[in-house]
Image 1 (cartoon, rainbow, N blue to C red):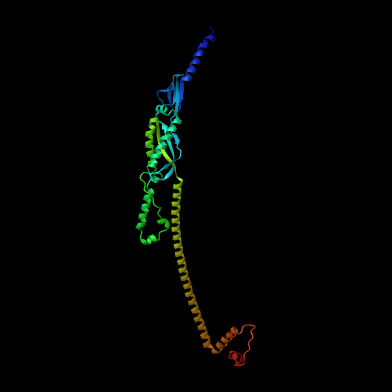
Image 2 (image 1 turned 180 degrees about the horizontal axis):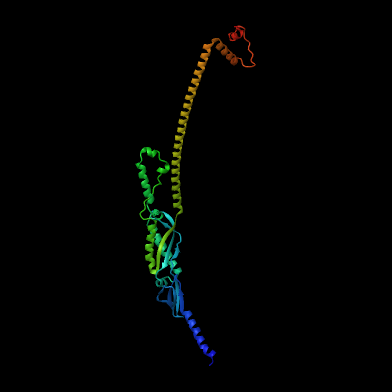
Length: 330
């Protein structure tokens, strides 16, 4: 037997070994976990460590499952609250497979798991929301109410004069704010608590549940909008009334200042006029005392100038007293 004939069995053995290695070895990634099934039934413990692993070829299969945190989005549902108000609730959740063997035995794959999540989370969310008032699903705390109470106490502590000087923004109260006992975050915690119990039998662990969106049903929405509009109109009317009062105060102050300025100007003008008249009288008196006839002559000329305008014709008798100075030759 020559060397080529001796090499054939070795090559066949190598090829068979390589084939058996390929059909028996499998790799698990960091984000995966695996279950080995034999004739459709799980065998052994789940494989959670990343790396190279082996199985019995031909009779065993590898079922791979995601080890990461997965997302679930619910469908918006119309849910009645405890105070008989209908709202649309859109829920989202994060979950993961914490028991691969139980998961495979109960829901088989992620599609089956999502179907179970739809049923359990929708049911639990409806149950929790319907057992609480609407405000519990909307707000997280009573911080706004507490701040308002502090604000109201500060307003009540002010004197009547200080209250009258307050602007509408300073004294405005944001409607009637209902006190909450639970809050939105605690509702989510209750949903998680109840959902964990219902999903534990499927090998599913709920990480968290969030009320992603809450929308009013049409009839409730209309009432809310009406209330908001009414509240804003009340605030606008109050601010408008405050503005008119401020305008009246400013106008009154302007009128008062104007009257004061005019009065002061009139007083000063009268004083100047009085001093001028006194000076004129003093001048006239001095002129009359110095030469009474000359003063009379000047005053008569001034009278002629005023009484006899330019291009005016008068017919007067020669003995008219008004023309005495013209006839006087002294």
